Image (tube, rainbow, N blue to C red):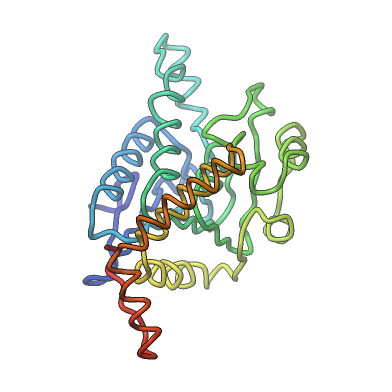
Length: 267
């Protein structure tokens, strides 16, 4: 890895289990080029498949989290006759979001600055969102005559409600960090210079937790978001049957009985 990489991948200390993916095009506010999207998708899939990774952090370098699609590249490719921009939703954005939401481990977005369009959608798809005071969110699709992509139509309304999501998408109104916290778009706002340490603290806590249970929490919530109560109850029951037989559950029960702190292994 070099500082010229469009995506920096770093692991925490030995056995800590946290992998940080840093979008690294600060001069372009981390706008998403084809190269960056492909690198991000590969890195997410590798993190999902690596048993040593127990929590993933997604953040940006410089003053921005992610400005969304790199429109300069987008327009240039279209003008050259390259149809790559017409394929990017299916080839990049959809699988990126599906990998984040389907990953059997927690993903934390450390929103270090402005997040717009598909960049904001990356944060919405994450399991936890911690924002710097200077962060803001913009659903900018309408400004360029487009509808939402990158799963934003699904994720945003589940965070802030249907009506609010419709407003933010149609009016393309910027939401600052204070409002984002108030409406539930993020779970926590910290000072800019405290963001990295706070995100790492939360990631370490999750990585040391019962990650197999976190995976079932993600899957049951996803099922419940689009199912009947009966289906949700069935999914919960199935998950509890599996989790009840895990080493982590046995460890938690033994630790409770013996009044000690449990040590989870994610198994």
